[in-house]
Image 1 (cartoon, rainbow, N blue to C red):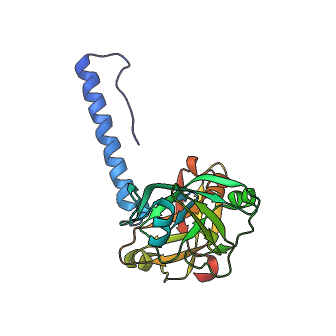
Image 2 (cartoon, rainbow, N blue to C red):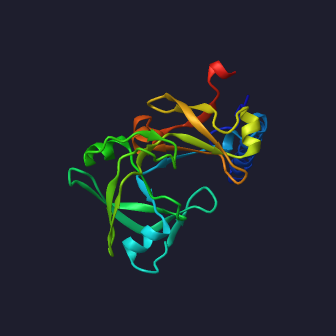
Image 3 (cartoon, helix red, strand yellow):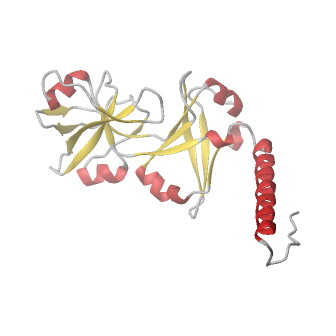
Length: 235
């Protein structure tokens, strides 16, 4: 308990001493709180993954010109991944378009477009929820760049919400690659997002990816806390 018996008024020296004493007590209380928190609680990052696309080397050259490569603009949270300077226009079957969809790098073996359901509806596409890279039997679209056009026969998905983690995180949460875990979001729209796909990699940092529809629905911007919770049936 903190009590303050100092008078409201006082000399500058008394005020300075009181302020220093209060700051010291606050620091001690914060240190105690952090010391008793479960290991790693402050490490979780929850990111909104806005619409974007991944391209093959061949498609990069078709869209941006012979010999073109992606130009890193901003590093993403996961090491080795980045948002590129390049964007493409995504055109759906209704001839509606998203004019500037960001390309993420590095390049991949197959091109893929990841949209929220709201984006897909506006384009006239009925897209499935898939793990990234699982594009068999999915709708296609047309990509337009400054130097050319690519018609994808498949590859447009809504990426299912997932969490990246390393082996130590997996051990702490008691999960293995491919398992499911829930995300509790404490905000004005307090919600539990269930069945996040667990993706484990030696180099991964602890990070959840949800899309813009989900982020807006749970008011992630104003969330006071997010935590991973194992489903009751798996405990």
